[in-house]
Length: 128
Length: 111
Image (cartoon, rainbow over all chains, first blue to last red; front, top):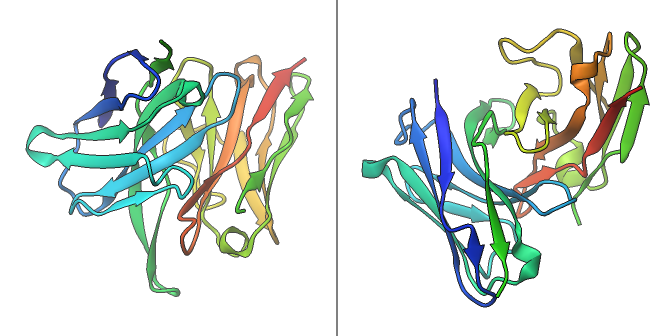
């Protein structure tokens, strides 16, 4: 059974870089069948996707966060990471990592995806 | 801007059925049948309950069902139970530079 576990500092100072790691167990991290996501939830607000990465290292970011986000992976260690630079209080949130199966749409000839497994989340507070 | 709009809250009594809507406002989401739904208890990991509009993962109660008509997807919870009180989010693959969209979320209250 696949499990994902987020880890990293719970407190980050404004203007600094938020760095989180997601450790994957119970699944082949190098599989071509999945994307690996980061999603967050600010206090009292809804879920917001941040970006995702493919086993090849190809990354995809939400356009509004693209200038500050870097997602990377270390398949030998079965983990992927999130770096979010120049943080402000608005980046305070519960951060989730997740897995998304990559499915082939035969008629359209493209891949689509949906998140099927989530980590439990880790709270990050941006404050001086 | 691409978005999936959900009602902020929906409520019902035990045993009743409720429906949560998820409306796409842009073409890069509206035309696709890749809507998924998640149940989220505060402080817990969200749980996939519907994918590909109306498919249920193994182990998910058949009280949860999905559908889609035009640019609006819907999640129906039948035989409402107190344990169904949670937040529910829809999501969808999106084409072009949008890539992925999450709904605004709906709080379900069991009266």
